[in-house]
Image 1 (cartoon, rainbow, N blue to C red):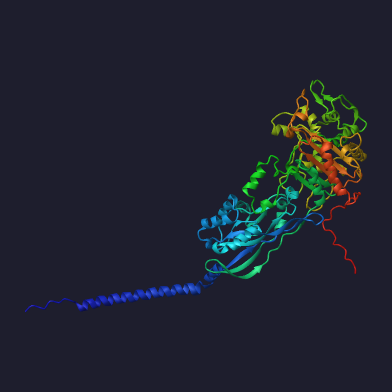
Image 2 (image 1 turned 135 degrees about the vertical axis):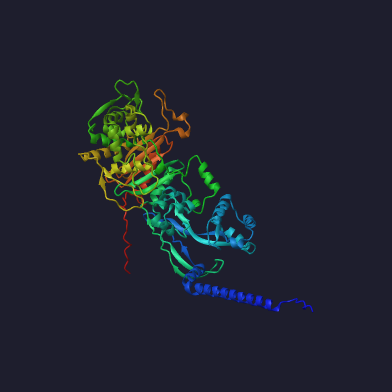
Length: 628
């Protein structure tokens, strides 16, 4: 018989099933063991680490910017303060369609290209989620009202009030105070890590002037705030806070009334005025005109306003007092006279005959005096009073350019004065080495003669002229101009002048300049005090040997610059002034009255009587208490 056909092998299948079951159970147990081990690793062994990571995700430390220090003048008048500024910000995570939202906002408030460009840069920089991005600052009340009324259909917008820098006197102190501006990526890259931490959360940084020079003092110390956030980074509550330390207030040596007098005296003319107290170097006024509105720069100046400044032919952004370089003309003749006395190449009795020109031996070229027919017989006193070029041609030639350079540097000409401002121009007090280095030409006798009347290669700033005048007024004491710095020790220059009366005689000569026969007599009319001064004019272009200067035929910007240096009261100087009026033609009649108004503002009281103010007190005593 045949065996029956078997369709299934139950024993074989059961063995296969058993093997598979064992393998499956083993795998499940293995995976469970791995899972449990992983859980133990995360929950027990690595508990501290992941707790810290979790807290870091949930708790964040935010920087809090410190209030910037205030700036006042010597009498406590506020020159720079902090005011709330209402700005429009966007929270990108809530905004939805960003371009559409910005388009709607543009219908409600003005958004120029500068606002949109700055917004795009800020939006693309690294930031935390839900951190608002500024779009437009300086919102007016009307603009705020429009935004608030339409806020329900503008998701993601926020109006915030933040303290920003404000300059209540605007253009009046623009060049000396400077301004602050928003910190950018280039600023942060230039900082060290410690400096970056100091500026965490800070939006503004001093760009120029006093704001820049005293940035560390005005900035303060950043504070911190610990906040709890949700998974999206939105702040839920504040856990801990360390308040910032406000910046230190800065009291300047400047005087509001002298600054305003200087600015008003220039009128609509281009120029600069610097006034210094020779007793301690305090800068009383520092004006460059035209100026600019520093408030426009704080939150970012618009393209329209900046283009207007850039295209203005009067260049209002240029600091003429600090960086403008002009030939000093005859204003340096008193300093050169002191140099000639100290070097022994002249004295008060020595005279020359002035035919209206000076001529070197065996040289046909004539160096003309401003007075065509000459001054006749001239000594040093008369040469200063009537500004005789011929006398100084002769004395300068005998002195030589090497000694002239050395002496003039003692008056801070041709080198920085040391004022507490950045980017000061050093001017030029030429020498043989200078000409070889910068012009690759040898030095000629004619160069020396031109330099002896403040022309040729000689260039000075209005600040240097005021400083040189202060040194002259203080009989050779080294005056370092200071706007906010601490009082410095007084040192004498290397100018010895064995006879102290030489300084007094030079002062007498400068007082005579404002007398009936002097070139600056206009400025001393009805003065309540004796004024020592020296006027000057500086050529904008050279006049040929056989040519005649005719100002009536020249364009306004080709006319001579007008200069004036002065100090008073002459017997006990309390103010020294340097004035430049671009294309003002005549120093005595144009720049002289400007200097007079500045000195009157400092030396006269409200009743027009002479009342010399005391020197600056760095820590003035508090007002005395009045007993009941």
